[in-house]
Length: 387
Image: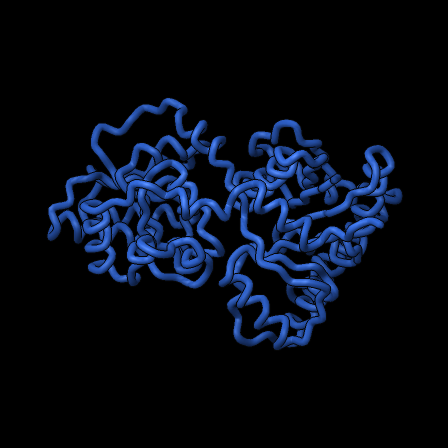
């Protein structure tokens, strides 16, 4: 079959990385796989191998279209956004959706019609929202946790999701979308829960890349330096463990973002400069994860928890604080005891406990995330059989 995966950009990020992984999964399962992205950026993830790559550049195309009329429409959309809050995508999408349809037609003219077109992330949906096509599948990555939607938000939600095929990547995301969909009375074509694929072999290969090893054994965490990741809680728990539970391991947090200053201040306040390290953004975090004694996740909300799954692929045990989302989908059986309350003392005690009694084999927890299972789920749920 001919499958397209569509994402807004290929910048370094979890959603973009999964879009690449999904396109590669379809290729490895014998399908003709295409990856379409809308915005060129200076810092891009490595392009997938053996996948047809297409840059649509919708924003630039919009500015240049129709002898400058597109640029004028962009300015009008920005002005309307000032008058009607958060409405920019509504107006700009009217033109970008048409441009997408035109560019998609040109690709299909060359390669043939797609059987399935999978869009990742709400920012991607917004850019093409006016286009309706039964082959389109919108993959919802995040929890929609608002209890009340105002008048405008209801309109926006209906524009995005009305009569769409929807995929949620975890039970938590599925439940939150269903709640919003029913409360706003949004008709949809189909809603399925299909998680993200993990290429075990590729991840393990990346994990063998040589790195300059830290001097001391360590615990690791990774993610955007953003309040939702709750890294200060991890640092507080680590400080408690050092003071009260004989913790001797270092702590390494991989990532970058807006909360770096607050994280650094927390480290300094607790006098942990010599044992808590912030190497910054690491393009390939897997060697760091594989060599760690434990991976700890403290997110307040986590759509799925891919980094936990990737840690298990690397053979590294995991601890996570309890949060809405998808971690309980795979942290089952013995792993369920590795989930704890978001409290510094409880987390410190859980880290110590798991370090003393690690799980050795994660095979059964990773089986549902194989390329074969994920690609088959998309095809079985959304590809119309040809007579």
